[in-house]
Image (cartoon, rainbow, N blue to C red):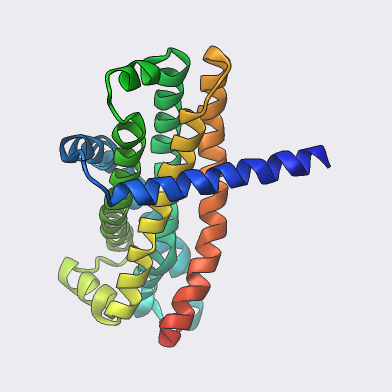
Length: 256
């Protein structure tokens, strides 16, 4: 019973924290310089990881897709099947999990370290709104960076599939990409990409909440970093199920 009460209290604190983030995101000052800095840290510095992962995921998906479609003599559908798999689900979800691992741990550890060393208290003593400067800027940066990283993941995945397919069948670049994207419409591409803004909000808010409220010295910082990765990943996966159902409701033809 006590654990249930603690869990409810924790979720209540996280919900109030998220509401405070949303409210502060639309009130001045907006800290544009810090937001751009965080977009660089979260987005640009995550790009190499996203590109390499996309190439690997695309190559593996292409090989598995070929082994399946060859049974039905449908090898020509490999680029289309790969593009659909990446754009509609694999790309957004893998990007979210990679960012939660790299960025979530970083935000949790960074803010946790600042909390336990009283740097946040020092900022507030200088009349700086620490919540807006440290938390809101990171959450906004996550929301902005996630769709961009998802597009990068999708392109890298299709490119990785092209490399894998070229080694087997010698498919040309133009034919492969024309086939891959010829059957995709905006209703296939836009909703899965836009939903990653929610992923970014989940990652940024959960990690910042754990880091901003960290206690217990160095052990507390490590705990905040670990919990940031684990919880943001779990919330992201659960939210993805709900968002997919919501997208099917808004765009009934997107599931076909």
